[in-house]
Length: 265
Image (cartoon, rainbow, N blue to C red; front, side, top):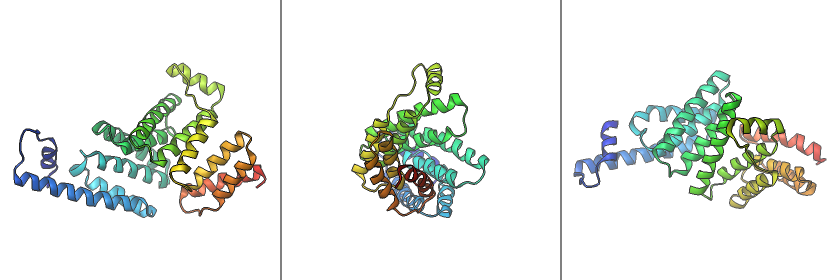
């Protein structure tokens, strides 16, 4: 079915009763989209090859389903996945820029979709690795705004709280000079404490116990910074008990090793 026909079906006036043929086309398109979304959700959880395959599948279907936010936030997620596994800086930056643009489209198309806000925020966070200082700060504000919206729309998603915890923790570590730079550019520096970060990481654990190795690592960091050494050690032990599977787990393990050394675990 053509993308033109699909878009027409989506934008028909409510007053007009679609005929049986149009209803059949619309149902077929919805069925095809649902099958596609299930497949890319499965690939997202898979190997690096699966993640690249997911992006390829989505790009082939963009003309057909690119006016649906459910499709677009998954395309944003796929760009994020492939960014993370790409080996060259040029390839990473291209995927980050394109993913951010698609994420913005997803949010614009459906401002009430929590996942669109969440993945757009993630792409804004990724773009801070490649931008000027001014744009890094700007993207940091956008990241926070869209995470807040994602939590408002879907308050039981642990990923949003984990990301917000990381944002709070990084803001809490900003130097006086960095805060002054942010204030000079945008009038008000970002504000968050280690306690704010801890609250979000604990919320992750409340919603989804043993959510990730990295969440335990950040819980340990927060407790260490707050002088609660025994609790920090407990979180380190919890992190060590989890298997190292993904690249993110490998990064978490590196931070865990140095953190445990500092804590004498």
